[in-house]
Length: 241
Image (tube, rainbow, N blue to C red; front, top):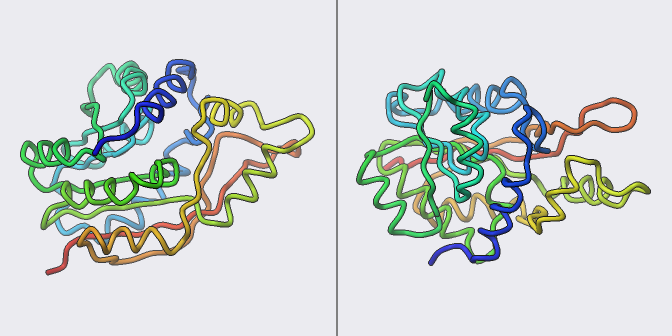
């Protein structure tokens, strides 16, 4: 199994069009507002912080570079070659390494695990953008990467985010400028129920070690100047046996 060509091309088109300017992408908020708070939740559950860390669905690498300041070896992995071009341009010193990966394809995650061994994994907002039939395979791939000693941190939009997004999209002037390309390229967030994510995790053979709710910051603002935040749910998972 691998992702559909339509889905892959949607992401390639989005990232080819995206600007290199910081904050130009709707979800690309600065690390102090995104991966920073997530690490505060994730780090207490790491069985081995020295393991390589995979930022899965790394996009243009904004969060990956922050992770590379905190962990000895960080790999940014993404389906889109165009996204990785952005990431490498933004990281001329090579703080992290970057790899094209279809994490739905079992052989690809198995090969990466064979290369790196057990890893810790960070995944932000990827599942809800996947095709429904790919979601379990993606989490199965995460379980492969985690192995016996790694831990995974997953954060996804909650069900309460959909009316917020739909309200933004249906405003009198249309979606905000940074949200419009998401819809235009056919990668509008799908529906993943709040209960589905932990079920995917358990079906992949992992245990949910912690979970909670946290606003997910975007780079877009409302007309009154307040930053748009979307409700999200997070969890930490790993093998305990």
